[in-house]
Amino acid sequence: MAALKTMNRMYEVCFNAARQAAGLKTSRLIQHRSFRISQPFDSSLEKPQFPGASAEFVDNLEFIQPNVISGIPIYRVMDRQGNIINPSQDPQLPKETVLNYYQKMTLLNTMDRILYESQRQGRISFYMTNYGEEGTHIGSASALDPNDLVFGQYREAGVLMYRGFPLDLFMAQCYANADDLGKGRQMPVHYGCKDLNFVTISSPLATQIPQAVGAAYAFKRQNMNRAVICYFGEGAASEGDAHAGFNFSATLECPLIFFCRNNGYAISTPTNEQYRGDGIAARGPGYGMLSIRVDGNDVFAVYNATKEARRRAVAENQPFLIEAMTYRIGHHSTSDDSSAYRSVDEVNYWDKQDHPISRLRHYMTARGWWSEDDERSWRKQSRKTVMEAFEKAEKRLKPNPELLFTDVYDEMTPTLNKQKESMWRHVQQYKEHYPVDLYEK
Ligand SMILES: Cc1ncc(C[n+]2csc(CCOP(=O)(O)OP(=O)(O)O)c2C)c(N)n1
Image 1 (spheres, rainbow, N blue to C red):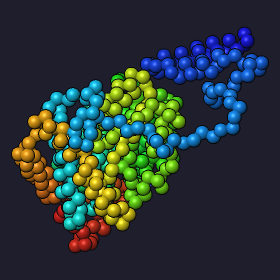
Image 2 (image 1 turned 60 degrees about the horizontal axis):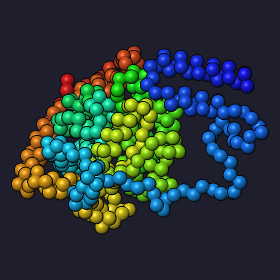
Image 3 (image 1 turned 180 degrees about the horizontal axis):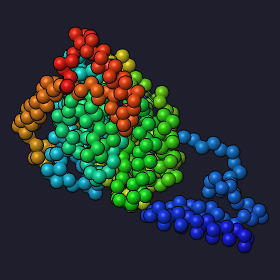
Image 4 (image 1 turned 60 degrees about the vertical axis):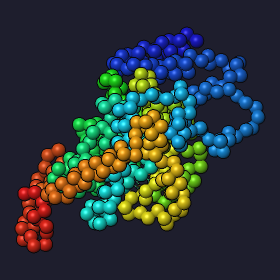
């Protein structure tokens, strides 16, 4: 026993030293450790002593049943007609805030329509719409601090829009013109903006999840009151990286919000082919993570859940999981025709009867904050603004082709320099085959 006490003490000293060095705010890890270590190792007690779990023995053989029939409930604030269900949950946002939500959600929708059409006409190479998921973007983005870091998948343009990313830069990225912050190197919709704390999107699914955890861990060490939010789809949650990220975030106690957009499909794969548990929210407790499921078409429910998760994530240094239930109304991307795997009736239901934009509009109309006239003039004005940005982006030159070779490494290597010169010699020799006039010199 004496030896055990000494060991316990040693652990405590070591953990305290490590904690002080890291400047950590909470001591959940230490509490867990000392709880386990201080159990008396006494074989006369019929108590489990396994270090891997705190549990009692049972003497009946019983497998745990997954509860998928009556799943984790879906938190909502507004019904489909925009009525507040429980006044104690009403975030009571001021009129200007709600109008801003509505304008951002509809502006995103207008931008999507114009860029989608532009892809159909071959003016840009690819596009992904956000139809039906506008409430998840705006509700969550508005609950964050502007300093919080965002890691996205590719269907979160509304988050960037909420933070003030200009239409010109959305267009510049999709057109890969010389104004694009990413220098025209990635496919459309792979946005990023350092000034707005939005980490550049990349195509391989779920890779951002463990990266977000690393960033949140760094924030914890800096003790700067910052959180990280990491968005992903329910399909991406099947990737190995999702498991790595969830587990690391819990064990390393990171101030992070995992935000899963469960929109029912991963391209053509419906959720019943993606998983057999109770969605994604049910996985959270398995990782020791506080979790909630919300109605993603209810912008206030998304706001409330994200606000509280953000507050606690930073105050307590622990991750939260939000699963926002929604529906992908558009095709997966411009390379997809979703009528091949789902019915028009199904899509129409969500588009016409349970849409985040119409729900918020009902709420605003009931308060006398929005009229038919307001709608008409806003639609006209927003369309005009998007079209102006669109036309400007289309006329702009493409980046200098030399930019293909820079930023591969921090500095150009001799090999890359050689390749660059060889490219210029080739283009010079065959210039009639290249649209050189479209590129900056
Ligand atoms: C590692 C990896 N595997 C496969 C793909 C191809 N892919 C692109 S999007 C996608 C579906 C993702 O679905 P989900 O995460 O539910 O997001 P949603 O598109 O519904 O928003 C797949 C399989 C990829 N980009 N990366």
